[in-house]
Amino acid sequence: MDTVLVTGGAGYIGSVVAELLVSRGYSTLVLDNLRSGHREAVPKGARLIEADLNDRAAVDRVFAGESIAAVVHMAAAIEVEESVRRPLLYYRENVGSTLTLLEAMVAAGVRRLVFSSTAAVYGVPGRATITEENPTRPVNPYGRTKLLCEQLIEDVRQAEGLGYVALRYFNAAGATEDLGENHVPESHLIPRLLAAAAGRAPQIDVYGTDYPTADGTCVRDYIHVVDIAEAHLAAIERAVSGGAVYNLGTGHGYSVRQVIETAERVVGHAIPVQVLGRRAGDPPALVADSSRIRRELGWQPKRDLEEILRSAWQWAERHPHGYSG
Ligand SMILES: NC(=O)c1ccc[n+]([C@@H]2O[C@H](COP(=O)([O-])OP(=O)(O)OC[C@H]3O[C@@H](n4cnc5c(N)ncnc54)[C@H](O)[C@@H]3O)[C@@H](O)[C@H]2O)c1
Image (tube, rainbow, N blue to C red; front, top):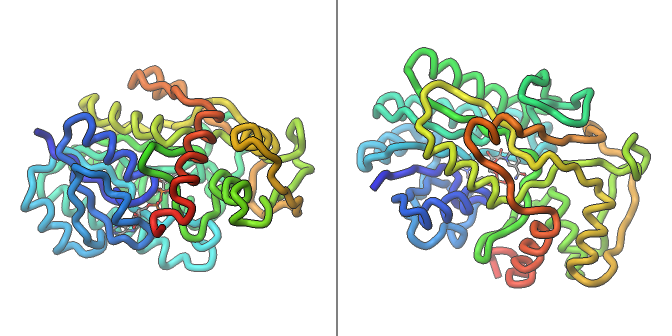
């Protein structure tokens, strides 16, 4: 059985990728330092190695002790605002750890990688719908570290014959029966909105209602975490030689107001809203053109916004205090 190593597999998206790998019969190894992940999120059937990716000796031991066919590299620090305050941490956590991982992979002869990138590499694009050809001009250290990782991986492909797929996710959301979103602090709209719906937060803050969008609030492309996980499977299962970069979104944009309205339908009552001013660096609209991955890997998203909200709400109701309660 092929073994797949998932770095960051105790985190939100990584745990769902690990769950899907286990269900498809892959021997699944999670490497995570539990900095922001949760031991309880590592799915049954996957093995957790508690280690830091910046610890080269520990990473080498993982590759020496296992027959690893492919690596899904999701471990990262992901808070935009924190990245502005603590750039050194972000370059160490994101670029430094990717460098260590690549050194260890090359030394061990492991040549297949799926990398978690982000729509943040595009910065504030001049257009709403974005293809992979859109210029990459990240506007914060988080986005810059992810773009640097993509460039590092491409250089290693050219020199060492690494095969890779980099997936630029748009807004990940939703849950499976057992696994959901539990970041601390939580900066993402949907879990914050559902916390307000459950009365665990006084209201949902809406940043800006004067954007050039249909209702004045920001438009984003929300993609179900299981659709993201399925894209990783498609990337692993198609033998990759060479490198490929794909946008991962649904192609449908929803405004903050539309997300709130859909959430109110799902939870069955109104959710208190507080309107605030714009936040610096928020583009009015960010929607993926994902036709390249649809065409080349045969992947397509199957779950809509309603399903995202319903699954996230079910998970939030079962885990009112996240994984800690
Ligand atoms: N959540 C989103 O909407 C979104 C959007 C675009 C891209 N991404 C990317 O997807 C990936 C996963 O995001 P997430 O939301 O699941 O984040 P998360 O914080 O839930 O998961 C990240 C995991 O990586 C682990 N980790 C961090 N640094 C580590 C290190 N040095 N060594 C070992 N483990 C380490 C953490 O403990 C955590 O379990 C990230 O690479 C992120 O940049 C996420």
